[in-house]
Image (cartoon, rainbow, N blue to C red; front, side, top):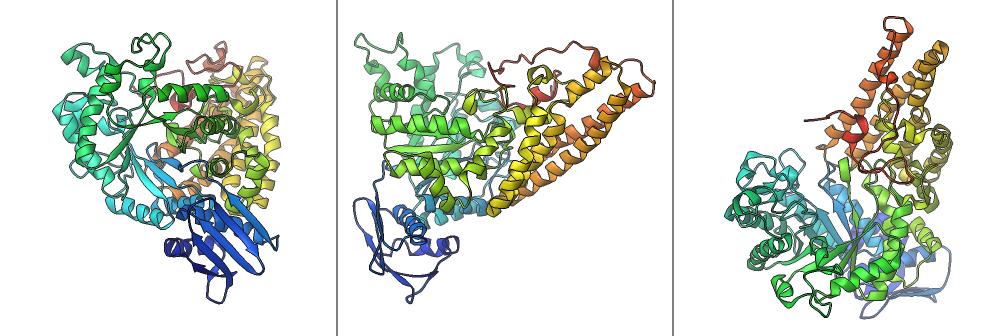
Length: 626
């Protein structure tokens, strides 16, 4: 379709060129006319009397409005749509630190999708995956971004009206960065920096310069979450015990003095200040307010409240009110639940997002973003988060949002069927798991990786008929693959995963039954099934590899390769053990003589198969790497 945009187009011309292929439009003075107005107020997309109209305040509003205009122009001759943005910032945080480092091309694809949806901010979460020239081992062999790569991403984003904000860590979550010898003198524990050590702040100044230099923004996320062991390592040996809130404040003051020198405006995750909010908090005065001396000790930083666990709106409202005791409204970070394991947990993502964003609107929160974490290997492709990005986008522009509306818009913005995507949650939301998988059972990951002979989770899945469940999913994903051609590779991956689990989910239970009954014929049949599982797992690995190398740098795939390789070689050994028993060379299979117990690890959930997205606790009861 040829379009002619006239009027206030100077701020959107470069972005239009980038998006023309995605929108399937050509820019021509001979095209259908659309009058463009850059003005304050709601965004507007209209078509009347043979001419289009688009009004926008920020460039990102224009690109969303253009999407609305094109979507409606396909079916309606005349229309007049307006939307009022509910937030001043609404964006995405993409994890580039858990093995998967998206390529520049993949970041650009995400930026295009965000522009069409109307999301205006992108953070790349980089613990050690950006280049710091003074520390060559920082991010070594981890796929770190160069300054030039980040600068290219920032320029691309700016053309689309999207602000890119660096997102790093300046206290904890630095295990991979601190594992090398260069960091021995300034680390407190394996993943936390040593507070008050001069070399710590030399290191951080280099990091802050390197992380901020590629970007035009002055905002920077400096992390500081989940430092539960702060001051309990080398700091304790050198200085004795000190309360973590005091340590946090003093360290934060030192870091903020660096960001001040660099002209940066920092934000931090707020969770380490949660002890201030407790009802019996020693940090409150008699009136229930945070003590003045505590408030004066917290530097001028923006607080980011993250929560993607609760489905009760009142929980978020109370937490927002608590944050306001510190003097300002926080930024809110929700979650797309791309880190459940091998498949997205859409049920929990939607339930928590609906509650949280309703609370944001109720409490006047103005800035939000959705996190795409990749815990324990980034096994779920980040692209699977697209329906949840659409959910955030619709909440950004509407007071009330229905899933039907999200689904309708995803057809256009995401080029896929929302209902087909929702079926992916059934890989983990299996029989035995509560609605919406609120306890984060990662059934598919457990059943793929667990050993077929030792079967640490076999007692958890006994009687749930999970093999039949996964067998029924195979044609569901096969059909989705056909009906979502833009997402063929993703549905092909999950179709193959379902095919593997249809056989593997209960294979350990079947092996044990045949062994205890001395049923040699059944065991011979199981060997044939094991051959099929082995072939299908290798095919799954290859399909997963295709998706990985299309989207990410190669570094990190070796971890996933080793995991798949572990499944394949263990199947080989399981077949060997069974064959030895069948042919009488051994009288007992010791692994099968052990009495089976339910998996009872620290992450075990009340109703699910298993929680705790940790590979090494799935594959063995032994000591995996120490």
